[in-house]
Image (tube, rainbow, N blue to C red):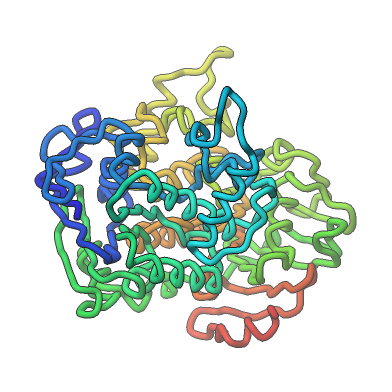
Amino acid sequence: MLSVNGISKSFMGVKALKNVSLEIRPNEVIGLIGENGAGKSTLMRTLAGTLQPDSGTMTLDGERLRLRSTRDAAIHGIGMVFQEQSLLLNMSVAENIYLGQEHQFTRLGIVNWKAMRDAARRQLAKIGVDIDVTTRTSELTFAARQMVELAKALTLEESVSRPLVILLDEPTSVLTSSDIDVLFERIRSLKKRASFVFVSHRLDEVLRISDRVYTMKDGEVVAEHQASQVTGPELHEIMVGRGLQTEYYKEPRQMAPGPEVILEANGLGVKGAFHGVDFKIHAGEIVGIAGVVGSGREEITRTLGGFLPQTEGSLKIHGESVRFTSPEQAVRKSIGYVPRERRIEGLVMFLSIAENITLADLSSVMKNGKIDYGAERRLAIDWIRKLRIKAPGPDIACRKLSGGNQQKVVLARWMTAGSRVLILDHPTRGLDVGAKEEVYELVRDLSAQGIAILLLSDTLEETIGLSHRVLVMRDGEVTARFDAAAGNKPDQVDLVREMV
C-alpha cells in the first residue's frame, strides 16, 4: 500500500533519518520500535505530512506520493492518532471527530448539529464504542478519548476510496491493561479496512499486536522481523546493542540508606483524596508507592510538591515542620518534583537546555544582579557531559530532544537547585528500554549522594526493583508496607493483594 524509499531528514545538521526504507502492506499492523532519538517520531511525522523529507521518495499504491501537509495525507487516507492527543477538551465528542470537516454539515453558514452528531455516532459504532457524542471531551477518561481519536481517524473513509493507513504514536503509554486489551481488540477488528503503524516502547505490546516489526537505531532501519519469529529480549539487544540484563534496575548498587530522616509525614491528608498517611524517607532511601488509579498516591506527590495543600496531619523536612501552599515553597525547602507530564509540567519546551537547567535556581548563575549567560552555558555543558545528554549543545531548545534526554534535563535542574528530596512521578513514562536503564543509573547515583526519593512508577516491577521500601495504597489509605532490600524483594502478587 504505502512505501518509503531512501528517505533522509536533517535538523540543524543533525541526521534524524538516514536512507530509511519500509513498506506497509494491506490489512496488517507494522510495529515500529527504537530508542528515544532513533528517528521514529520523525518518520511518523513524515508519513503524516507534517515534515517533508530532504531526499528519498514515497509511493502509495505504486504511485509517487508527495505530502506537503496533514491535509494532503488525509486526502490520501493517511491519519494519525497522537500520543499526547489532538482533541480540544472544551468541545464535544462530535465536534472533535469532525474538527476541520465541518463544511460537510454546513449550509449558508449554519451547522446542522444533528447531522454531525449522527455521523459521529456512526464513526464510534465502527469501533464498537458507545460514547455520548454531546459530552464535553474533558469529561472523558484518557482511554475513552483515545477511542475518539481513533474514530476521528476513521472519518477519512468518507473522503477516500481506498483502505486507510492509520499511524498510532504511543497509543498505550498511559492506558491500563484492560484499556489496552480493548484498544487491541478494536485494531484487530479494523484490519480488514485499514493498515496500522504502531509505535511503542513496550516490546511485549508490539509483538502482541503487530504482524511485522521494524527496528530503528540512530536514524536508520536496522532490522525487520516477523513478529511471530522474534522475542522481546532479541529486539531489546538489537535496539540498544546489549542484552536485557538481570540487574536491569541496578539492584547491586542498592545500598542501605543513612540514619538521617530527611522527610517525615504523620497523619498527612487532603480531604477527598487521602488521609492518615505516615512514612519517613531517610537519606539515600528510595520509597515507592504502589496503588491503582484513585488510590491517592498521585495526590500525595502533588501535596509534597506544593500543588495540593494538605488539610490534615503534619509534614517535616529535616525535622522542621512545613506546610506548603505553593510549589515555590516546596522548592525553597529543597524538594524537587519530576512530573509524569515532562513536556507540560517539567520543561519549558521552547527554552534551551541551559535555560531549563537553571530555571529553579537562577542564583547559581547570577552576577551583579544579572544572569551570567556564559556561566549558564558552562553549567549546562557540564551536565550534558555528566548525564550523557544527546544534544548538539546547551543552546538547543528542549522540544527538539528525545524523551529520555528531556528527562535528564529535568533531573539536572533539581541537582543544580540542590534538592535533598526528589519526587519521581512516573519518571520513565514514554521512555524506551535503553533510556530507562540510563534513568535507573541516575536514580542510583542520586541515592548514593544521600538524596531522599519518593517514587511512583507505571509498573510494579519497576517500583519493587528500584525501591528500598514500598508502601501500598488503596482508597486513600496506606494498606501495607513492604521491605524491598537488595536480594529480598517482595512479590508483585503480594502487593496486588493489598491494592485491590
